[in-house]
Image: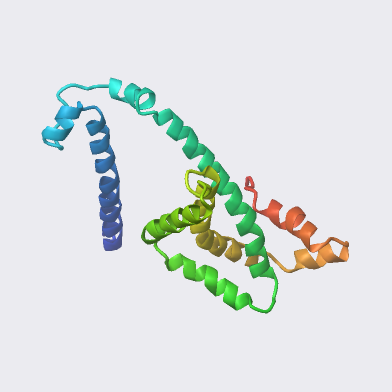
Amino acid sequence: MKKRNFPLYKIFVYVALITLAISIIVPIAWVFLASLKSQLELVSGNPFDFPKQMLWSNFADAFVKARMGDYLVNTIIVTALSLVILLVVALPASYVLARFDFVGKKFFNGLFMAGLFVNVNYIVLPIFLMLFNADIKLGVDFFLNSKFWLSVVYAATALPFTIYLLTGYFKTLPKAYEEAARIDGLSEVRIFFQMFIPTMKSQDYD
């Protein structure tokens, strides 16, 4: 009986996955160990040494003295609001781009796809300066220190990729769905909410 040779590409895949896992686990472990050090040990000691004493009280101090609990709540609020804004904008936009033909469709589709090539890290400072200057001109603190406008910025940066995914999904649905719905007298809005949105829900398969 011949022995099967282990495929070379599988070795490459395993090596790549192990390397990726190490690149993720090592920084997380290092940050966790650093969080257990005293401030003096963290500043003056070797950053790669194990803590001389495990200071679990650092986590309690972070939530009480540094108000990490408040920041965590703010993060949850902003994330949830960003998701709502993103879905409200991306779902109908993707549906229209995928299922309708209209003047300027290629332009808008290309505009959204161009957003995929914009690195968010490069536009953080320009966005901050734009909102900062707007507040100066208005004379009030309207855009900055606002959870809503922060959520709008987060939603806007995620919009191109979301529309790209949803447009591809809506294009895969048969045209017969819409034709049957129109024969039954459903409007385009009802077709979108009663037929296309439910298809996005996860289904259980036996």
